[in-house]
Image (cartoon, rainbow, N blue to C red; front, side, top):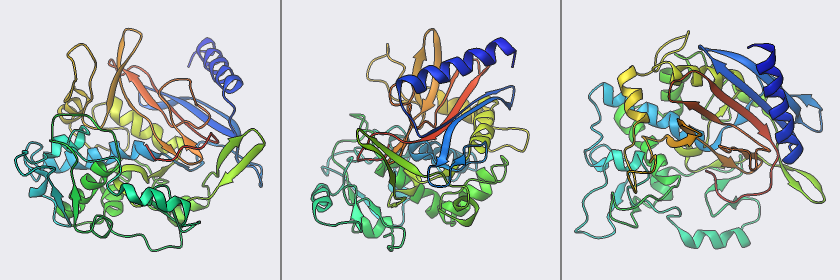
Length: 360
């Protein structure tokens, strides 16, 4: 990167940190398939004063959804999934129950665009449990202590996930549609989702320090999440979520740069390929628009404009970790956004933000 560009990037990062406090932040720019710029601020853990590096592990929250979508599209390339077929044709672990018997079935494409009618909270009454459950069960009943048994989705949904709207009629962002896509990947491939992602995405792209689970490969260098409050900083205890296909991946700036490089170059980086270029281009196209004048949503990827440039991106939120498309709440960041030309890509990760309840 030219020195002038690097100085401009460092100035922009400093400006963000001046306006939005963070315990730690890592920002990188990927260009021409490699991590051209990397800048780290703060620490990965206050108690040990561990510095943030390219190999610090962070939770990427809802950016997980894009990996699950890539897995679905891999199975589509193999002819094992039809995006416009009913999702129930592939779902074996539990049923999708329509809001009304007359409604058409939800398709795989509906799930990929958050238009399947899946509610944000399948069990609203569980939210009340946050008042009484203490540390064992919190966040609306959707996260558990690391030592607690994590229910399967079939157990959590009681054998059936009831839809709240007619598929294709409204956009409702949430985790349970992509959790269901993760279950479909398991049911069609015959592999647990963590193993499938490791063998078909992480390993081919050289993402050796990424995992869906809080495994040994990620625990040693895992950053601590923090809440920033007026009285100071409080560490957030790491938890496990019942929706792994929507929110559970751990990764590093180095690994995410390799992922971004593959997304920018038609599904492949210097280590390997995970999708054909035409398939990836399809994912970036609009598949649901409320109006033709708005960018709409692709398959998992959000579409938006940065000035005159059309961009595809995603963001994510978990307690202690926060990702945003633009400057607000950039205290904890894992962002990927790039122009339609694919000429430059940004990736960032960090720790510390004000509390939010639901993962995104």
